[in-house]
Length: 476
Image (tube, rainbow, N blue to C red; front, side):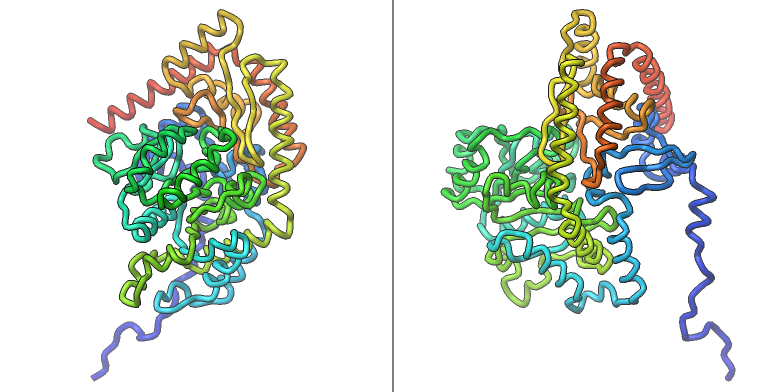
């Protein structure tokens, strides 16, 4: 009997023209997100004038669909460390695609993940010799917390006020930012200690119920450099009380602070580190938790437990290729040293503006992780405006700097939320001297005009009112 039907051999469909789709629909970005993704975020971007449509990125720059060039001082919150669309990283990803390698077979040990693990261990201290791959910084924190609990047999964590460790439920439990914890119910047990308070930390650890202390050596949102002796004191207390030390290097790792890892500035020996962001090369989500082999084997303690913690996408070939290429670029192009040099130059040139602008308290940081902190002006009239905006929200006054930086000077920056009057900079390490002059000239101009707040405040108020009306319409 002749049975006609589809061939048993798979035949690919017609070519999918993603370039044509992007070309035809570029500009619908915010409407699509408003309808299908996060309309509240769209309202925020429209309110502060950040609803730009970017069409291209290269190095430390972005271009919008009208061809206007922007200086990117955020670098995707640190993921574009080696520059946007780095050709070496892009080439490695294309090569892997061209090789038609089997990807995510799962029932195998793929070469590229082994190679990246080897490359990572070659760049960490000798005692950090076991690597677990996942997809994001918060997942690496989740892994670190689970591994610490398995190794110590303890359930509690300890974290510091102001620390940022991620937004998944476990990481959120160790989040030192209360505004992000609100509304999510009961979290895991974690004691919060004020940053710098070794006495308070010992009061927690002496109970010997804490699996691990998790900390950012340099908090990514405030970029406050710790007082001398504090980080070493944390490590000493952990060792004394059988508590593991987790250094969250998601934002600071891979050269961001001018060293490969931030903990190196203080000679620390963490038991576990969490990394992500820069390792991606700005292309493919990738993260790694690196720890002592003894901690690792506490989790994978038998053949029956070989998959007790895993991620379907964590060891995928594209992520591994991006990571390998990024590490090559860091070494071959001396990127870690470049981060140190250009970051110091940026801080020095910003601080040179303090004599001209009393509202500029200081720029501080390490490498290409920089915070600009503002303060109340000396003029009584301007001080009244400062206090009024601070009373409304801590970030309102620095937004009066961030908005014209983008609008007048095409410089992309952002405030740090509820962390004071701080503007955070995470530029790609490839930032040039001309880029630094572009930024400081723009900041000089904006700070000179910042006391003229009435116009921007009125415009922002009107945008916020329209956003609230749209929000109420969605809820009704």
